[in-house]
Amino acid sequence: MDEEYDVVVLGTGLKECILSGLLSVDGLKLWKRFRGNDKPPESLGPSKEYNVDMIPKFTMANGALVRVLIHTDVTKYLNFKVVDGSFVYNKGKIYKVPATDVEALKSPLMGLFEKRRARKFFIYVQDFEESDPKSHEGLDLNKVTAREVISKYGLEDDTIDFIGHALALHIDDSYLDKPAMDFVKRMKLYAESLARFQGGSPYIYPMYGLGELPQAFARLSAVYGGTYMLNKPQCKVEFNASGKVIGVSSEGETAKCKKVVCDPSYLPGKVKKVGKVARAICIMSHPIPDTNDSHSAQVILPQKQLGRKSDMYLFYCSYAHNVAPKGKYIAFVAAEAETDNPQQELKPGIELLGPVDEIFFDIYDRYVPTNNHEVDNCFISTSYDASTHFENTVTDVLAMYSKITGKVLNLSVDLNAASAATDQRAS
Image (tube, rainbow, N blue to C red; front, side, top):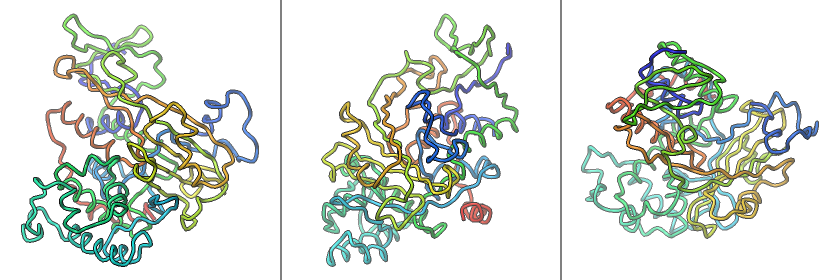
């Protein structure tokens, strides 16, 4: 192992594997983790048929991660399926998220007059083109806030709730007082992703779960000359006297390198805790009620609906994505923890599930890097947030890529060119 590399990527987490790929261009262990040596009941089905992601996230069909997959040609190693539904929680019930002017007119979320106001707003967003001043309706979205744009259309608070949180995917209301450009672009991305495969949601998810993504990026990295060393215990990052990284050691051997990419667990002295995520992992024998018998779906519970500081998220998938035995469904309820009692805190999301066969509760800390990468050449990812989509995760990956290489990754790939293969895979 005493060789020299430009970059050593520590860990097999998704962010680290994506970066490994870019820079190169399982089962019911769940039971053992939470229940020790107890045997799982036979009614749950064969353990080998479960692929439970510990931090599951859906991918926006036209989003940044899909562009990364196409850019790196890693799509040849993956098989995606469209997620059946996208829902939002309002006054104790689940509703389909309306994403276009046509859907706005049909949505039971709004009364007759509000539907008309929402329709006008959706048409404005759909027609908006940054390069075409005629579509701006006199608004400079780099200057006016999201709140000001919304107020022009006179939308009600509940409508603003689902637009900001279930369409634009903001995790709290701080976006309202920021320039509106990002907000409008996020809404357009949602609508474009929904139209791409014309399914019930804008999201896609890999067959057999997210474990396929790191494997695919690992294969890609190997194709371009990356070296993989698996099951290396107690990896330690080594520094020289001036504090710059010089390598990674394990079992008495050292891989010398100029840069290290890792998650916060490898360098606890160079990160700070910024919060924690509470989550419940549930195994069920039925789809979630009021989701049109969807086999997979995301439900967003906006913060105001729950009297919280940030949103709650519900992710669920089933045997249709090959992540569970026939007839079984896996649901996650997650939120930024605001108390030390996840059972009570996650109750609003859990109550939407109906009867559950088994439920596991967990809480994990979130960290952000505090180091100066220009001094130590260490590039540390931020911990995963509670959201059940990849948009925030990929933002972190792309920022890290730019820091590591000094370049901005061009993701203006031809989505249409890849659509034939992707359409087949996502069917």
